[in-house]
Length: 103
Image 1 (tube, one colour):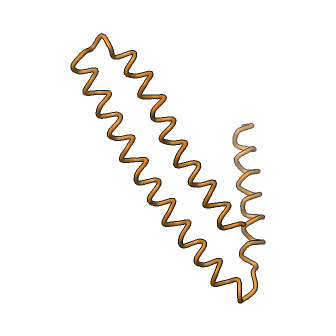
Image 2: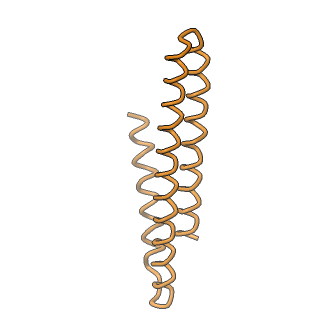
Protein backbone atom coordinates (compact mmCIF):
# COMPACT_ATOMS: atom_id res chain seq x y z
CA UNK A 1 0.00 0.00 0.00
CA UNK A 2 2.87 2.31 0.79
CA UNK A 3 4.38 1.73 -2.67
CA UNK A 4 1.07 2.54 -4.28
CA UNK A 5 0.82 5.79 -2.32
CA UNK A 6 4.35 6.75 -3.38
CA UNK A 7 3.53 5.92 -7.00
CA UNK A 8 0.41 8.11 -6.90
CA UNK A 9 2.36 10.96 -5.30
CA UNK A 10 5.04 10.82 -8.00
CA UNK A 11 2.39 10.52 -10.71
CA UNK A 12 0.45 13.51 -9.36
CA UNK A 13 3.58 15.64 -9.02
CA UNK A 14 4.53 14.81 -12.61
CA UNK A 15 1.18 16.04 -13.85
CA UNK A 16 1.43 19.13 -11.67
CA UNK A 17 4.75 19.97 -13.32
CA UNK A 18 3.45 19.01 -16.75
CA UNK A 19 0.49 21.38 -16.54
CA UNK A 20 2.88 24.23 -15.81
CA UNK A 21 5.04 23.22 -18.76
CA UNK A 22 2.07 22.90 -21.11
CA UNK A 23 0.66 26.29 -20.09
CA UNK A 24 3.25 28.08 -22.18
CA UNK A 25 2.66 31.09 -24.38
CA UNK A 26 2.04 30.79 -28.12
CA UNK A 27 5.70 31.54 -28.93
CA UNK A 28 6.93 28.81 -26.60
CA UNK A 29 4.31 26.36 -27.80
CA UNK A 30 6.23 25.32 -30.92
CA UNK A 31 9.45 24.87 -28.97
CA UNK A 32 7.64 22.73 -26.43
CA UNK A 33 6.12 20.61 -29.19
CA UNK A 34 9.55 19.90 -30.65
CA UNK A 35 10.90 19.10 -27.19
CA UNK A 36 8.14 16.54 -26.71
CA UNK A 37 8.64 15.04 -30.16
CA UNK A 38 12.42 14.75 -29.83
CA UNK A 39 12.15 13.33 -26.31
CA UNK A 40 9.61 10.78 -27.51
CA UNK A 41 11.92 9.62 -30.28
CA UNK A 42 14.89 9.43 -27.91
CA UNK A 43 12.94 7.39 -25.40
CA UNK A 44 11.57 5.08 -28.10
CA UNK A 45 15.05 4.42 -29.46
CA UNK A 46 16.46 3.83 -25.98
CA UNK A 47 13.64 1.46 -25.06
CA UNK A 48 14.01 -0.50 -28.30
CA UNK A 49 17.78 -0.75 -27.93
CA UNK A 50 17.41 -1.80 -24.30
CA UNK A 51 14.88 -4.50 -25.18
CA UNK A 52 17.10 -5.88 -27.95
CA UNK A 53 20.14 -5.84 -25.66
CA UNK A 54 18.26 -7.61 -22.90
CA UNK A 55 17.07 -10.25 -25.34
CA UNK A 56 20.62 -10.87 -26.54
CA UNK A 57 21.98 -11.11 -23.00
CA UNK A 58 19.28 -13.58 -21.95
CA UNK A 59 19.86 -15.64 -25.09
CA UNK A 60 23.60 -15.72 -24.44
CA UNK A 61 23.15 -16.67 -20.79
CA UNK A 62 20.75 -19.49 -21.64
CA UNK A 63 23.05 -20.71 -24.39
CA UNK A 64 25.99 -20.73 -21.98
CA UNK A 65 23.95 -22.58 -19.37
CA UNK A 66 22.93 -25.18 -21.95
CA UNK A 67 26.57 -25.73 -22.89
CA UNK A 68 27.85 -25.87 -19.33
CA UNK A 69 25.14 -26.47 -16.70
CA UNK A 70 27.68 -26.20 -13.88
CA UNK A 71 28.30 -22.55 -14.65
CA UNK A 72 24.59 -21.69 -14.59
CA UNK A 73 24.68 -19.93 -11.23
CA UNK A 74 27.59 -17.67 -12.20
CA UNK A 75 26.00 -16.88 -15.54
CA UNK A 76 22.69 -16.06 -13.87
CA UNK A 77 24.29 -13.57 -11.50
CA UNK A 78 26.22 -11.90 -14.32
CA UNK A 79 23.09 -11.81 -16.47
CA UNK A 80 21.00 -10.15 -13.76
CA UNK A 81 23.66 -7.50 -13.16
CA UNK A 82 23.90 -6.88 -16.90
CA UNK A 83 20.11 -6.61 -17.23
CA UNK A 84 20.01 -4.09 -14.40
CA UNK A 85 22.70 -1.97 -16.07
CA UNK A 86 20.90 -2.10 -19.43
CA UNK A 87 17.63 -1.08 -17.80
CA UNK A 88 19.35 1.76 -15.95
CA UNK A 89 20.40 3.27 -19.29
CA UNK A 90 16.76 3.39 -20.38
CA UNK A 91 15.79 4.99 -17.07
CA UNK A 92 18.57 7.59 -17.48
CA UNK A 93 17.19 8.38 -20.93
CA UNK A 94 13.73 8.81 -19.43
CA UNK A 95 15.06 11.22 -16.80
CA UNK A 96 16.94 13.23 -19.45
CA UNK A 97 13.76 13.39 -21.56
CA UNK A 98 11.83 14.72 -18.58
CA UNK A 99 14.52 17.36 -18.04
CA UNK A 100 14.31 18.35 -21.70
CA UNK A 101 10.53 18.61 -21.67
CA UNK A 102 10.16 20.35 -18.34
CA UNK A 103 13.38 22.39 -18.48
